[in-house]
Image (cartoon, rainbow, N blue to C red; front, side):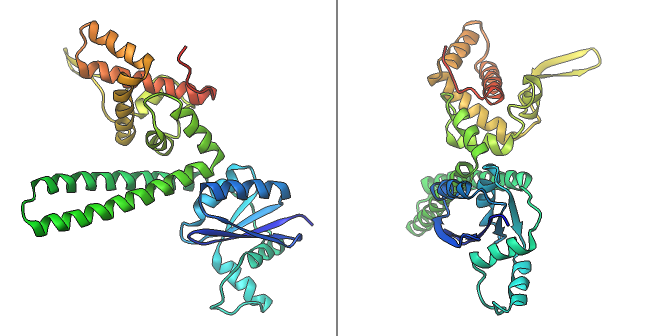
Length: 309
């Protein structure tokens, strides 16, 4: 008959039912809970894991299940409700639970499918929203410095507090999304092994440059907007420049390179060698950013973490 799993997703919790074993359990909807979920599901070797689409809450769960190589189907809640009503088990207003989802999976057997493209977009949207919040925070903090009216300062302070709370929640969502996917978790660990690249920059690269590790160094530099090109018209030839590509990725690489010129021994030595050769600071920093991107590309390609030697 096979084993079928139904997962009912809510904001903070996942309720799970396994058929025909009849086993039921719950986990928290966060990175730790999803890791527990995957390990328990693997022990059942399920024929299908069905997750009900619930307005986005199911996305990290789907990533964890699919990333673990388990057969996944994200199902339309209307289909499950019609199924439950046909069984005479539910009224229109009754909640759909994990048992009903598991029974639907066992009887209907929807086609398993994964959601890599949707998941990448989901993570990219979270990272983009985080960037927007950071920009709003920076703007409000500048306003706070200039404000002299007490009433305005209080208003700005309240908004800053709200934005800081939202930023913390987004960081948790992003971390849960990355840590719930074995593929993304491996990428984050590899990228963050490089001095100068923290988890936030790793998240930006995972979301904004999924090609990292699959292309050669010139192609990946072009995508990131770090490939040099020369302005030229007729016989006139200008200086080499960078541009185009993915701005958010380029900014993240620049930030990591800037930190790397202080704390990464390889990048620090490379940057200082360029300065000693008479290169302007910005030119040296651009070259360092390009070198860092090449290093990160090789690390993901070879799946080998950072090594100084």
